[in-house]
Length: 127
Image 1 (cartoon, rainbow, N blue to C red):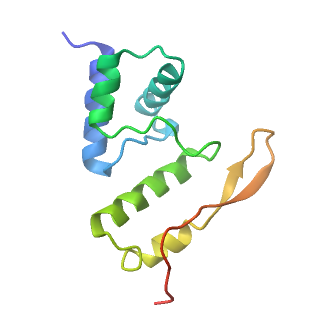
Image 2: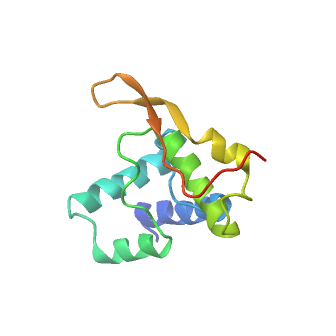
Image 3: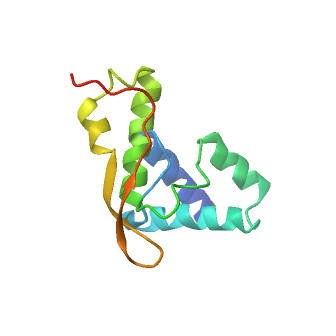
């Protein structure tokens, strides 16, 4: 019989197959919360080497963009996959790249809202 961890791991593999990344937003329910819990256990040194290895086989990211919200992290991860697949920032979806320059919904640790500039690699042309 599989454990609850194994069940979530299989869900994460399916998520990655569909989305090409493992950065599940917490708002997606049990899987998102499970992913964050794995990051917490890893930072605390409470995740077994076997589980670390399994997650790393999926290119699991242990750290996600400081205090930015999950939506931004997911969008940036998707963009990174597009750029990695094409190898060319200029010929990737310019509208997607342009939309990622600023995240106006980031909230600081003190609760204040601020604008976060996301550094972009490569030159973005006008068209």
